[in-house]
Length: 325
Image: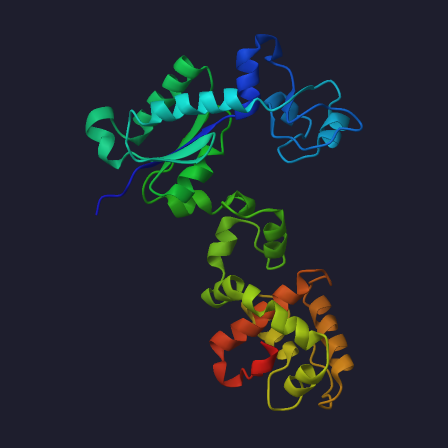
């Protein structure tokens, strides 16, 4: 089966770039789109020019913080109609090369150009032509990623901004992705990246190298968080399921997942009576610290992952009462 050729076209600092295109005196100056700047400014940054980004200004930052970082920046309101007009022009150019254009926002789109080679050349050639057409006809720059999948093409388009072109040959996807920070994955924000770092996952390659059981645990942990929280709160379910000899303790589960992620297993505490729920909770927290995980909001997700991992690998030992789910 012939591999597909996917392009991801992403306009550079789109709103700010349109402002600099339409007002030449703004070129080379830090431009922030979103509203007026000032110590009492309200609202958030919609777009920042690359000159403004050197001051650490980025989309979704408060206008007040942007002003504090660069009071000399030019702050402008959003001019939606002009941005929409520029977007329509760009999308029209993209459709010259393939009918398979999938806009995913006002300033970016995927193109499947697998069937366009006979007319326009291979993927990199089409990408260069598109970049040239956008610059000549719309007065903007675009960065393009070329790959065999949407995910890889999108990541590639972001690596050499502005005005970049990154091509990932078929078969080189894993090697291309492996060294990149985990935050480069589409949909992985700061909170998810922080949670993954608790599993020593800092790059895409680290995530790919995790054992399948841990990946399953990560995928399905959310479904178990509330159940585990109820267990950790103490009460009947905890007393009934931990340390009774009829179920599995969280410490045993942590020991299992610790071995999977190459962490030192926690020390095994002295046996507890079935009713010693508070002491068991304290032992669980101690075990987490011994594993190197700080007592943060991510603890319950980690324990939930441990529960699920144990369920996948040793189901005969997994006896979580139905009312605790």
